[in-house]
Image (tube, rainbow over all chains, first blue to last red; front, top):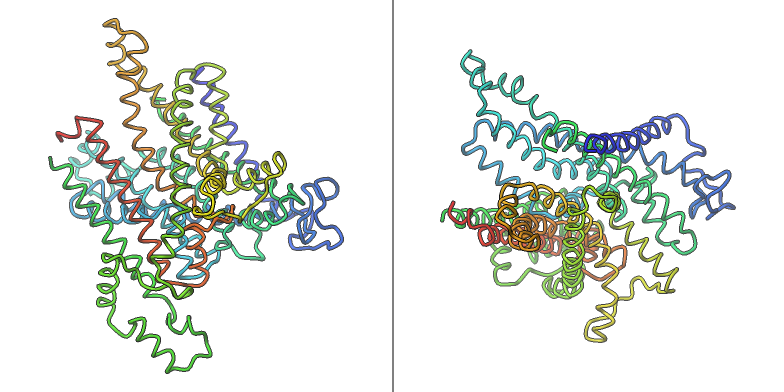
Length: 270
Length: 313
């Protein structure tokens, strides 16, 4: 029973994520219509042929814009998770392995970053440097750092007490090679889980910022901004609001399930 | 008893760092605030006069001391855009934001804990699986889209479609309260899903713990085991999750207020950002993060209240 549930998360999550990767790759070569091509006589068409998910207030094909939006979402998500991961792992490793004043300073800095609720830090960065894709990535990277730091730190704290680390010290390995070759591989599963969840929170945050009009700017299509544009025509063209929202939901769900699936796979306690 | 003073010290330190950060961030800004306010056509004399008025001619450290001492006196300065005290603007917006957040927390506790206990109890049951699917969807749904869906549903089902018409409290407090229920539900529902999953998982974990077996072993009735032992231990972890959620609720309400066009602190912040109204942004950022820091402290305090083991650490 437990075994079956394990693979269920992984399979559904993997399928959803795989579907979005496929859409991402295809969108570089093909979309049914050009993303910004306006068909002014065919505004607010309901889903059907030839517009699979209907058209928006400018008569643009919603499906093509959603496909292209995958690029924005995944670009912002992947880069900000990667930056957050690299910085977080470095800080967390040093913090957990050496402890002392460095650990305390990092903990305090993390507490400071985490004192800004949700999108507030991102909003402040946007307020200072202006909206745009790069600033969104910077903002979301900073938000992602504390989580990765915490996971890495607690992993290092735990494993540095193990006898295999002691053995490595005895045969004269330096701290750097112990950290990278012996402790880091132990926490890779935990980091994978965190990266997958981090990706889904980045997707949500980017969509939220773009919905507020402070994230990705036109003409780059973004799922969040499509929702912003759609809301004004909520009663006239409900499908315009439904499609981008469903897509965000499915992408976030996919990465959440994938993260659960990875955890089930590696964690013998569950 | 080194636990509490340490927590309070780090809390004060965090608040100080936050205030420093929110202040510095807007001072290192590319461009002169006075110039931004007056626009490109302003004469250098006008800019200099406004700089003096804003205190921009003084050194950074002095400006910080001036600002932070004002914060302690409850004087947050004047908004650049509205030319009114920031404090009054914030108090007005909080009359909308705080009730939404408060109602959201009530909804979360009211639905989340019972559903979570059900999820734990029926973990290996069909109902549990169904609940797990629903909550998995609930944690993934973007809250602002949920808000849009809720408006669509209200419009289609009850022909109730009135975004942006918040009735002031002193006009009709019942109407005001009613108009805040859909946004509060929107903020709450994804968190209900999170809490349900969390309580469910805690239930399943605690259920197989030794002390539960002992309790059953000594012949306690299921109800007693449940209320005296299991629930108590689950509540400790629920407190943590609720504290952490406080952060999300505040952050989330920034976006939800935009969805429902409510004149709350989130809308004030977004407007302040688009007009680069720095005194206002600083004050709101400091306020929101201050609430978060205090919430976290409360969570830590409640630990030592709920879990005697921590008190003696």
